[in-house]
Length: 118
Image (cartoon, rainbow, N blue to C red; front, side, top):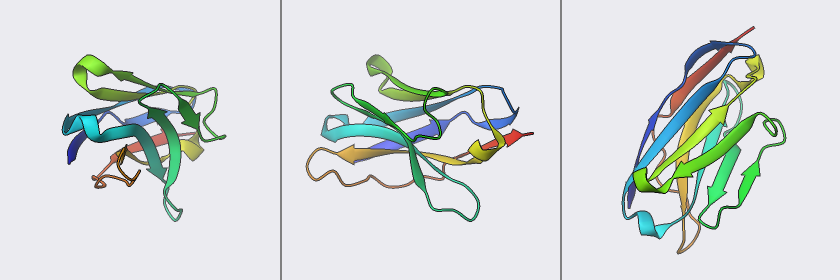
């Protein structure tokens, strides 16, 4: 199993930037990919950005060109740099993994709140 600790988030004005961090520990060699997901009030959780072990990335259309997912292997940490934030980016952001064995998700944490004011 992998344990994840999310940090970052907060309140920012439209057009501003935030960086989220997700530190992984435990059986990190079992990870195929790490990603950021978000859930806005009244909406389903959705993928924001994902980074695979091979370095491939995938972004939601709504965040392309504004969000960048990256990792620091030495720190076992994945980051989500969010620029030019919009009020519609307001959501709880969750970090999670996909395991190599069966691509299942890890356990969902509490997430971190991102609020963008207009």
